[in-house]
Picture 1 (cartoon, helix red, strand yellow):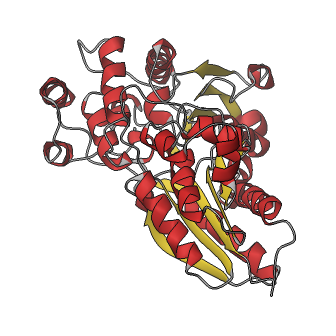
Picture 2 (cartoon, rainbow, N blue to C red):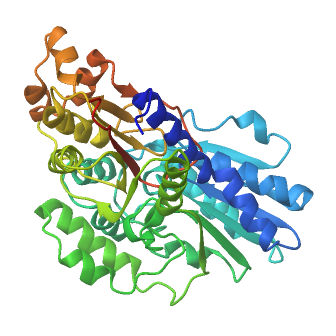
Length: 415
């Protein structure tokens, strides 16, 4: 079977994947299956905070006694929550900003003042590490942003980045547990991290990490950052021994399964790749393209989260665009292969695009605009080229965040 419009079909399957891990529906399912009785106060943090909160309100109704919602600019409409008692705050992403610090202090003060009988519902999704923060003593915003900027350009995996962030935070790695006051707590999360490790999702505000010092000690950090980590670990001390169970309501595996089922229903052969796509984005883009070229006809479903070591100064783009451009170089001149790589949150790095959908003619279209793919790849300027070639994918905020989804289609021969 040959798809009539492969590019359009891949975009439709991306939508199916996003629907399967929608924040509102995922939270509704969890709270309907196991209801919360009595007054509830909500703390929703992350890129999917609005969607998750709306899902919770559908089930909780009048039992919601207020809360706090912290997300990215443009990811929430405050007017939706005027009658709920839920405060909407906007933090910085991918770098924390003054709004992130204000949201962190507001959360701590609110928790300290809540009635003892109030139950807490935490709704956590990707992006929380930057969106809300309460740094250790002496760490000012400029230094905090410098730490995060270094991490984002370091090429370190997300788990390692979050261990560093945890070391200099009063909130992360179980730091928030000190402010719960013995109240009943329910924690629902959308996972955006490899292996769905609870302590890495949003840097684990309710998940104590007993070996944090040991883990971060294995990393090679610049002296100025290692000094802040050492000071932060001393101030943090020993966190409480245990936090509440974390319930995963949406994961990358769910999104991949939804795409695979849709493609199989269309009569396609589907390869469900269980391994996470990690490491250098360009290396992975080339490797996935070669797999696609050497494959029998059908759909390949991958997922994960790659990294990009940024040059100075970097161009425009994100890891999905970087991966897609590297793949496009390998696919150049072919008329039987397409590859889509997109962030399930609707964003890719510091851009407004989710990623890109490339094919064998991407480079030809870019060359007509006067752009060289290899130069743009070296300069981490994939976004500029992919805009010129017409291959960027835009979804807007999706209400979820389960890492990146990569779909590759190989068409059968026309002969």
